[in-house]
Length: 89
Image 1: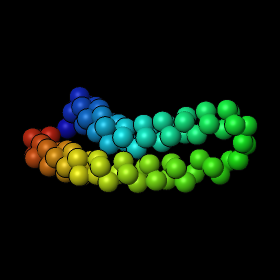
Image 2: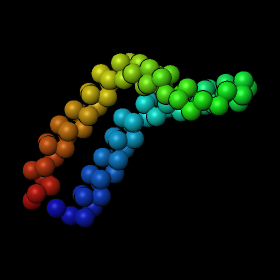
Image 3: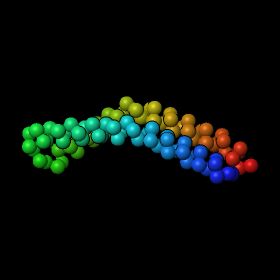
């Protein structure tokens, strides 16, 4: 196994991790920004106010994107296992 192969696997792994985390992080970011904007406009300074909407939003994002996320992860794992015999020589 060469250092180029290891770097390629690490790069593919990081890209898959970025793809899988993007829907959840984007949902949390948008909801957090909206709640912060609402809090600054109404001057309500409650720290726990953003927790429940973020939790619901992340749950909805997982319901909507979960199938795609699982398929992407399974495809990456299948490709990795198929490429292992060629990497070990």
